[in-house]
Amino acid sequence: MLARLITASEAGIMGIRAASFCTKTSKLQVALAGAILCSLIPLQTHGQSRQKQELQKLEVERQTREKRAQVLEKTADQAAAEIINLRNQLVNAALVRDRMEKSVERSETRLKTLRRNESMANARFMARRQALEDVIIALIAVERDRPPALAIQGPRNRSRNWAIAPSAARYSYEQSRLS
Image (tube, rainbow, N blue to C red; front, side, top):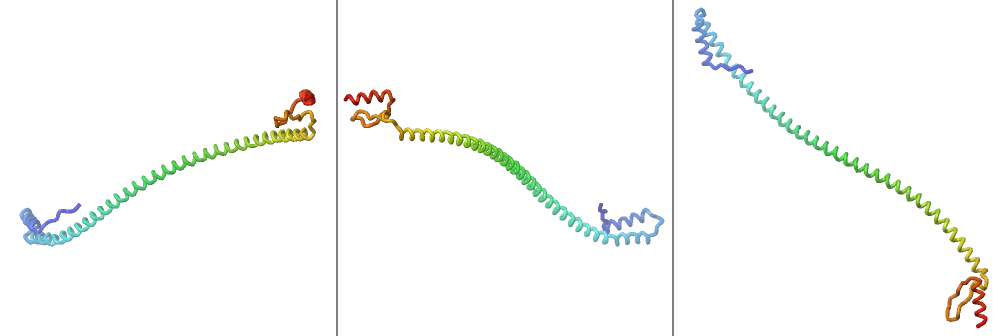
């Protein structure tokens, strides 16, 4: 990725080596090659420091992004946990709603049954009330038109009236005449 930088001493050594290896080249060419290499060294070090700065900048940016990714992962985990919690709450609410609906249905059924029972009991009550009114009317009519034999007073030491059958009334009546 990054080329190895050549120092000035290495460039000089390379120039000497190049001179010793190249017998056909002139010393001027070797010196020129060494000078060119030496002139390139500051460019490479300047480029290297620039690359180091860029690398450091990229490293800082990478670390920042990693931290942000970790924060986002934590946030995503929290959001996932919250979603699960909300789903559980939704399921529980649905179960409660279902139980309540069933309870309402049972209550409505019970109410219909009670209303039906009430109407039947009311009908029986009205029938019995009518029968009782008929009996009371008959008793009132009998009380107004009661024959004397039916209401005989007992001995004087007893203060209540006795209702007796007509045959017994005759016997009582005859007994009271004799006394």
